Length: 220
Ligand code: C5P
Image (cartoon, rainbow, N blue to C red):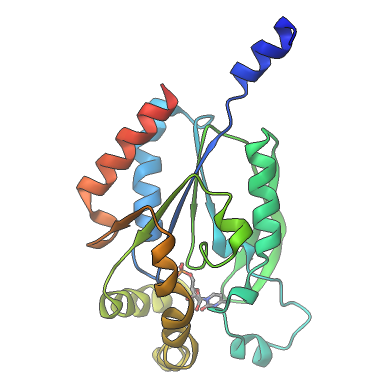
């Protein structure tokens, strides 16, 4: 190995990809965002980034609004996991990717992308991250938010009425038809793949501090 090659291999240390999975409204976003916000002053924007699985929902612009509203968004097939997996692979190779942007009101991808650069720490959060074997294997650390489902439902009602333009009727019908059954079929069993299970939601201070300490150790 020549000197330049040896130097490059030190400079391009493979990023660490940390996945945070769990039920809808279990506190994944809050947990990931808290870690990000609290480490940003130390690591800088070149040091840490977040990817949301939600951004990879398949585009449905070819369907009528009625068809879009009936779609099962809690089934693994609702996501373009192959694109997410490919983009994580690109990031771990040190490349930049164009991340899709998803709109919950229209159930489609918008005509823009967000550029994400490769960073030493990549946080990925989403409901079905551990259900696809190839995707699961791209994570170095796997965490699962084990929040009681009744708490998740209360949070989901609050969030979906305020932020996603949904009525109480549509939230409860969707919950009973797909969200709850898919949780028991796909999400809850995927907990067994987690390295660390977090109780008490996204505000669990000890869990936040432990992950921050691990990230500091990985980046020093
Ligand atoms: O942010 P969160 O993890 O809750 O996002 C996943 C949830 O978004 C899924 O449980 C799914 O039911 C919901 N969803 C939706 N409408 C879409 C896409 C996803 O209600 N168009």
